[in-house]
Image (tube, rainbow, N blue to C red; front, side, top):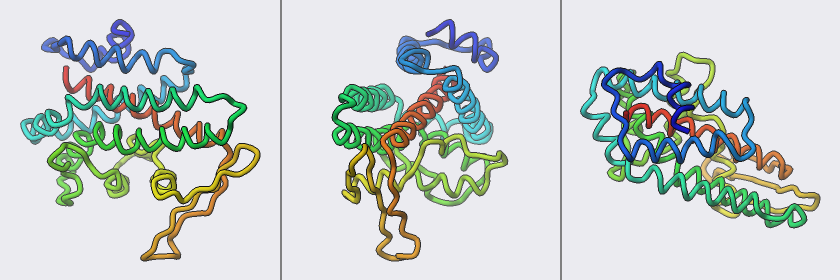
Length: 242
């Protein structure tokens, strides 16, 4: 894992780079997931692109307020590995369910998606979004993480309006409607390995989402997209830590 990290991201490291035991553990934990376990070259390219984009946001904010960004990172640094472990476990449990039990597989993948969305992305995105807000001089309070270091992922919608790229790498695989549908039990498992999902808006019914019918394969793909992207964002934090 470490030689691969050095080879692919060495150009972003300077002569003062410090590799601590914690950093090595984080590299191993991140790269063992992206280099193995049925990952493709396409997955790795997505991972690398996200890592570089997220690190760019961190660096741009760091130019203006390095102390403040370091403080936000310190709030979540001890949560990164446990959050990765929890998400990885939830995803593994979903993958281990027999293909002959599609109903349970659907529930497990919905559950793993929620774990990643609420327990991982809200943590690892926080310093990156905060740094982006500083670089762009955004006054929106939503760009500041809470006292636990977590941030609302709804901020990504505001971020997309300010970004200069064609897409926001931080948002790949994120679908708040799927997470809401599962959290509020607004789903119904159908025959033929399909699930019906809906996300009502009680205040603006015309903006309610769904109902949509998703095959299990689409749900699995969404989980994989979010997991690969989460690993890319984690890699950006590793680079920042170093």
